[in-house]
Image (cartoon, rainbow, N blue to C red; front, side, top):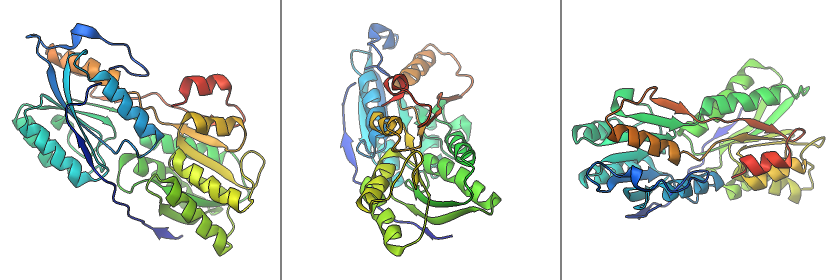
Amino acid sequence: MKKKVLGLLLTVAMVAGMTACGSEPAASTGGDAGNQGGELIKVGIINNDSNESGYRTANNKDLQNMFTEENGYAASFAYSNMNDEQINAAQKFIQDGVEYLLLSAADTAGWDTVLKDAQTEGVKVILFDRVIDADSSLYEASIVSDMDKEGETAVTWLTNQNLSEYNIIHLQGVIGNAAQKGRSGALNAAVEANDNWNLVTQQTANWSAEEAQQIVQSIIDSGESFNVIYAENDDMAKGAVAALDKANISHGVGKDVIIMGFDCNTWALQELLNKNWNYDGQCNPYQASKIHEIIQKLEKGETISPKVIIMEEKGFDANEITQDDIDKYGI
């Protein structure tokens, strides 16, 4: 098994005072969002780079559309795919006196000190999109996808294809975040458990189509055989397919190479409908309305139970997907 880790530092952009409303899409909620004194609720929102993927673009837009002055919020946003930069942004938001810190962590580790500082200053923390390695007493709620289940659902689908041999190109996301861990973990377990499962290569393409294309092209040039590409997001699957097309290698239903992606971008689901891809795992980006509901409960002094709220998600098979599925679930 070959393992390489390619690093790519992504730039950080700080945008203060950005405003937003709605989720999937949500209508304006008007005056019910304000606090008892009628003042705007001050929130600091830390997210990954909005250009990271189609999923992240949809997720960021959903947050921007919800956390507006119209909906009762004064929102500041910070973006980075680097954990240390996110931590610095969180510390600044705490110093600026936000009432709520909303966090989608770039990495699962390293957040204890920040969360304890927030608690000391009376800042309520709500996690979204990704879990972190921290005691649940340090945050109010966690609205996340079950990344482990996403990986397990995909690997179960792949197992059910009953191939005589699985020679897999595994394109990983940014190493260390919850999405990468969940989607990688299930595949690694299957490879360990099955003698006829082989990782031709396992490399991070950092969610990037361009990096994925380069990795797959290098495998093609090496002459190694493969029949599955397991890409941890749609953009990397797209890049992989570009390399296959350039080399005139067939892919999709009944073809030489099985193509698997995650996120359910509309264009990716269309590739399934056209039978050019085989599988796409859903990752639901529309979390803003649930975060808003939690904030409203906290403003009323209510306790959030359960703390962990799992987004509903599924996987799509090219042989079963319909246009209605694309219209309903595409992002």
